Length: 298
Image 1: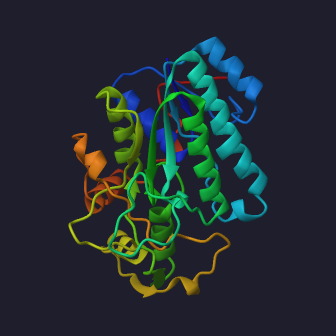
Image 2 (image 1 turned 180 degrees about the horizontal axis):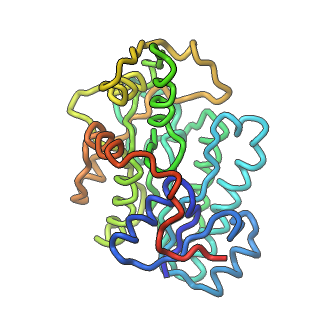
């Protein structure tokens, strides 16, 4: 049995769609079907269903709320929930694929350099702290794991930067977007394909980084991303620095992660521009995101 946690989320839905296309059966759960913060419920579910593979897509991702009003829930889901899933997966002998984030690193890496998988961790936000603790919980559980760190996620099935820019452009002739935060966007489809690729091609367990690719020497900011999203519109996109958009959670100024280890597996990573074009060609699929074939466990 394949289990997908967070099955109705942006990434979980993408993974479901991918498995549907391949006619692979799975069971997906969301918070209403399986409360991952309830250890007894998780243990009971795993004992009854004995999954062999777990795609752990469930996460708390409200980065700013995690600093105050959502702090407790952020801790429960990203730390306790992940620990419950990892320990249960280890007990039944399942392989675990856990999605983490560039936020586990600090903002100290010079622009132009890339984070390696084993770089020191220095999270500067509550979200980053809990995702790092989630990584540690997976490692400590004894489960066979793939931990994939990603960044700047966008896709067809959930609220994200692409839809935000498109919606704002409908009523704003000019938009300002920060140009001092650097990284690479990640299409959920590319991420889902890599998640399954690691398992199917029997890669070595451990940490991997996955974003869409950029040309050698290309420096990508949120401003560049916005320009590409709106390049076929009349909306003007202007660059500003982050001080113009104060936020509760500190954002990394360099989120660029090395893709060398991932490329060495043989996985082909589309450019972020090609990924964006493919995503936009599919359109907004959020209204029918639940129309996947796999079972949502009740």
